[in-house]
Structures are given as C-alpha cells and as structure tokens.
Image (tube, rainbow, N blue to C red; front, side):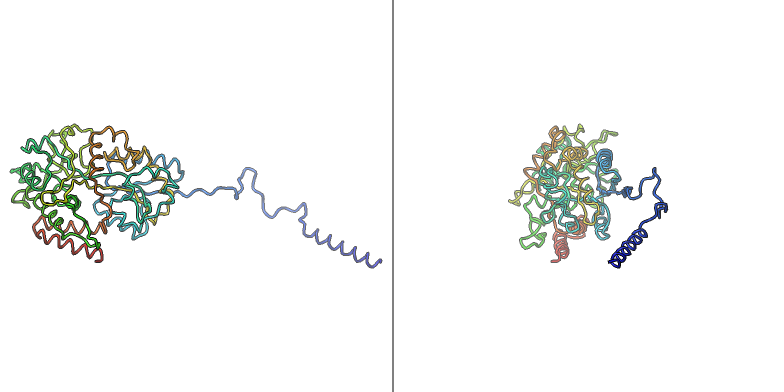
Length: 456
C-alpha cells in the first residue's frame, strides 16, 4: 500500500513540475513589445485604396457636350466613388477603325468607347456582355430606351447604351431656292435634283470655285460619300444583301445610285467638273449665315443629320425646310421616302478591368435628365423615350425630325464588315468622280472587293 501511495505521489509531483516549466514566469518580459497606447495596431489599419482611372473615349462631340460631361457627370461620379478619376479622351471619326483595332489587338485601352450604328456587328465579339450590369434586373431604367437600344446589342445581349437617334434629313434654304428661281420645293425625284443642282449652284469666275452649292450631301467637296450613297440606294428600295447573304452592288438600284452621285456632281460643278474648286469652308453650318459677314455659308440644301444643321436658336430656321430623301419613283416603283438613322452609342470592351465602374458611369450619364441634357448640347433626339422633353417638345424642328424618323426611318445597323466596306466604297467612289472608272466598273469593283472582305 505504501508503495502505491509513493508511486502516486511521485506522478503528481512530476506533473506539477512539467506544468510549471510550461508557464512563463510572472516577471519574464514578453517576447515582443506591445504597441504604444497611442499607436493603432497594425492589424486594424485599412489598406489605402488603389487609385483607379476610368477612361472614356469619345468621338467628335461639341465643346459644350464635353464641358458638361466633365463638370456635371464626371464630378458627380468621382464624388460618389472616392479614389476614382474619370478621364475623357477626344478622338475623331477620321481613322476610327485603325484606332479601335489597335485597342482590341493590344487588349487594353479605354474602358468605354464611342461606337457608331454599324459597329455592334463589327466589334461585338470584343465587347463585354453587360446584361448583368445594365439589364432590367440590374437597372430598371433600361426599359425607357427606344429602338436605338438594338444598336447597342450583340447576339441579343447589351454591350453598352445608345446616346441619340440622328437620322439624315434634307434641309433646304427656301429663301435661296426662290432666289435661284426654284419654286417647287425640295426635289422629289432624280431628274428634279439634277435640274436643281445645275440651276442653284454658282461658280465664281474670279476664283473658278463654287460660291453656292445646290446640295451638300455629307461631304461637300466630292459629293461621293459612302453614307450618302446608302441613303440614295435605300430610297430606291435597294437591299444591301441578297437572300444568300451576298452583296447586291450589281443590282439596278445600286447602279442607279452610283450614276446619280456622278450626275449630281457634274450638274453642280459644270462641264469642267474636276477643274472647279470646292465650296470654301465657312463658320457653322453650311446652310447658315456667317455672323461676321452676313453672307450665306454657301449651301442651299444639306443632306445630313441635325448635327450639321444650324443650332435651333439661329434665326435662319425661319427659312429652312426639313424633308426625307424621296428616291426616284418614276423609274423605281419601290422608291420610298427615307431618313437614314444613325445611333451613336457607348460600349464597354471585354478587356476592361473596370466593367462595374463603367456600368455605373453609364447609368449616371444616361439617366433621364442626363440623356436629355447630353442631346440638348448637340440638338439631337435622345435615345431614351422619357428623355424627350424640354428642348425636344419646345422645338418645332425636332418635332418635325421626330415625325419623319418615325415614318421613314431606316436603320444603319447590321452592315457586315462596315469599316472594310467604307474603305472599299470610298476608294471606288473616288475613282468615279475623277472618271477613272465608269459607273459599271465602280460597282463591279465594290462587289468583288466586298465579297472578298466577307470571305465569299
């Protein structure tokens, strides 16, 4: 019994010694000094947020538009997102395809880019699917956008938001028409257009250049812009593609459109068509009046969007009519009045690492009030239906434009390989106006080269 008690006592003593060895003595200094009472513990310090720059790339906007975006939209956005800076870069539609191709090839560039109507099919695969950030579940306001929203989609999914609807109208100075002896209003067929071009265009003998041009169709000098060609073509009932998807530039309507462009240039410039100088560039719209001289800027009619027309507060509107382009019904029974509608939009590239911030900026810049203000700076029709208030309803011009767009609008979206088609057409039409190629040769060239561009 004594042996058992002795053994148990030995075990207890040994355990006590072991526990004492494991405990730190009360007088022993800690291995590391505790931070001073006034010093915040390192573990509780919040890491400083990395500064972020949201880059927005815009093309050819008015100074008023850019100033408003910077002062109102960007300032509000940066206040709501500490550490974020919005940077707007202003580019131009000249060389846009090279610029955008560079962004996508490098896989880096602006977080938001400015695209045109036809570019959803051109760049769709390179753009981010924004349904989860801008779709109805994420943003109820998306329901307020009109038909222009389709231009901001690819394969049925949102890639951004449309800014405006900008159809191409025919604006004519009724006072200058009457002065030229033309009393029947805006021409409504090819024969009348050619007669009007010859009657209302004036060549200054002293400078051997135009001092008055009957019609400025997008591009004043050549009168052979590819978008002008499309407007003429669609007014004849032309379709850009056949049922099998092949281009349709060898159709009767396509040949007639090309011939019309050549005839209008000859009627405007006279017999020595390539020896006469173009209309000098003036200040403001070509159908407005120069405030410094009080003289007309030189054009009687303008085929373009409201962007190129005079500002709505200009007194010249008392003498300006707004019409669609009517085609040539006598020779093409399928002719119809047309306004070719363009819808510029902002897209988010797939390479962007700031997609959520980009979506938040778009929501702010495309709110009901902001979409109205954005378009007011340009005199265009907002893409949001509920943004068409204020200056829109107060303007007789915009009411007329909206009416024509509703009745005669033809979309510009859906053009395959639009950048390549633009290059092909401009090259061929350039050879048309110098008469290096015939009308038939021009269309054959476009047809062949566009088929190759489409891989056909």
